Amino acid sequence: MIIRYLGARVWILVAALVAAAILVPLANLALPANHPLHVPSYLVPLIGKYVCYAMLALALDLVWGHLGILSLGHGAFFALGGYAMGMYLMRQIGARGVYGNPELPDFMVFLNWQELPWYWYGFDQFWFAALMVMVVPGLLGFVFGYFAFRSRVTGVYLSIITQAMTYALLLAFFRNDMGFGGNNGLTDFKDILGYPIQADTTRAALFAASCIALALAVLCVGAIIRSKLGDLMIAVRDAESRTRFIGWRPEYVKLFAFTLSAVMAGIAGALYVPQVGIINPGEFAPVNSIEIVVWAAVGGRGTLLGPVIGALLVNYGKSVFTGLAPEYWLFVLGGLFVVVTIFLPRGIVGTIDHGWDALKARRRAKNREKGESEGTGNDPNLAASPAE
Image (tube, rainbow, N blue to C red; front, side, top):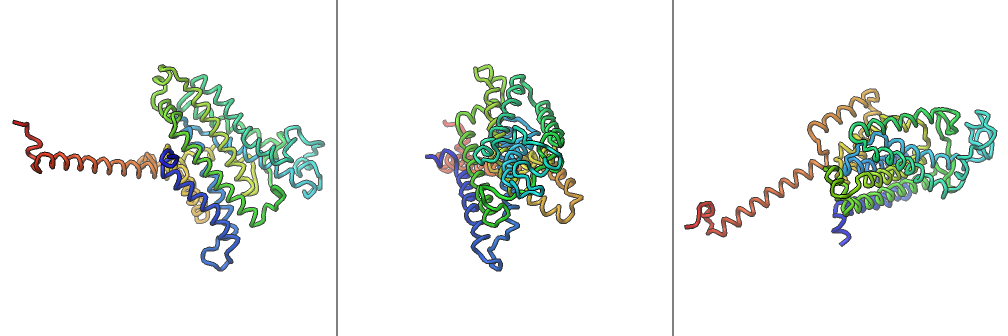
């Protein structure tokens, strides 16, 4: 019953992610380097980064694909979750920093800070940092969404103010007096939960955690969009005025989905930071948020599977093209978005689904015609002529 409710596609994706969480670490840690199935150590965090991006694309698709809210600011939620995890990792360095200060991170010592800012308190505990990973992006998403949706800001205007939000945060985090490392951000991490962050076993565990987190996110989003709430979200997307006139409050539906999406993006950012080893204000750049939209569009928005596939494919292509011709990557990305918009408006998965549905419709039509023909003595002329 549960499998039928969520759909086979959801469970296939979840099974693939669980299998990856088990097999990739085993191929990295258990198999010798000369084995054909061995996964190199450098590849584990790289694939883990792609998985985090896939979770971010899924978070965006929850509001864009199912509510029609084109957010150009989801990179802000991703970065805030990353900064929350980065603050915890910085506190774990302790006296092992360049300046040997057990309380202040190196950049604060360099800038002559005398004491730790109050908003850094508690980040020496993992449970507190994990809580802030969800609370900070979720709170920003809730406050922003409350005022935006209550004011009935929609369409391109909402997209513009989401981009303005992330750009404002970019400028704020660039400032040294904000206490987040300024332009350099947070880096030089040592440990996570007491384990060396550069160790192969730690990287494998972080990869597995990213896959499990994405699997849980897929289950969560799948359960939502296949519930009555999911039907209501589609109604708000396609006919908001009618939904309002029959007694529903579309702003509450939008606010719930937008807040949940922000929390998911924050978790993705928190898993991303220890695998790449740095978080800086560049993650707030508006172009990053636009790239997230490209991932969802390429894969197929509103398809659940599409954003995940789009994020994996586009970022793999980015790794290849930036290695071969880094100066042309942005042109390739822009061209890809134009091509998808013109020739594949439903994205990869959406186009496949549409073609499959059309094929099934033609088969059903042929079966009906065949049944009608057999019911009239196998004479199609009799089926078309009136009874005497």
